[in-house]
Image (cartoon, rainbow, N blue to C red; front, side):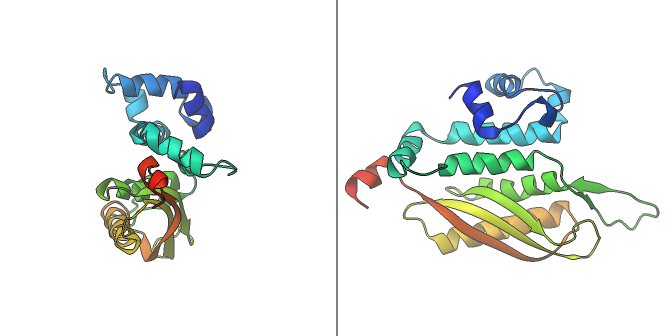
Length: 204
């Protein structure tokens, strides 16, 4: 998949990436992120987009082909839906304060960064791919109850309940470690099941 197709799927432009383009980020990723570019490494939007590109590279051509064959009439393939959701995460969104005992402290994190934390939970759960992630509640106020909702794609034959629980546990751990959000619930919603070509051919 070339840089133009990456840009089409991700829907990102220089205005979302602190002046960089998807082509530049693709080349940076191909070079192993070397030499290090602080303007990219310190940009939250660029880091989210780089993660998306890595996820895209990790999807095998066979899996993409199987998805196309299985859903020829679909408006969007599940891969495109996931990448579209990642595009939204590159935008900062609301500012979420971080509670601190220090007087006059004004620490905070963007909503986009928190959604990135939620999505990173999939790294510890092989086979899980997270799509749209939302924070329900007034995250701009410390201590207000927040409900997390994450949509997930799972491989055919996997234990859905087990994967969902593993992802739910990881999301809670990441949010506890990096935010002071009062998370009252984490909902993991299964949106897609990934089929491989062999499974499709065998009718499984």
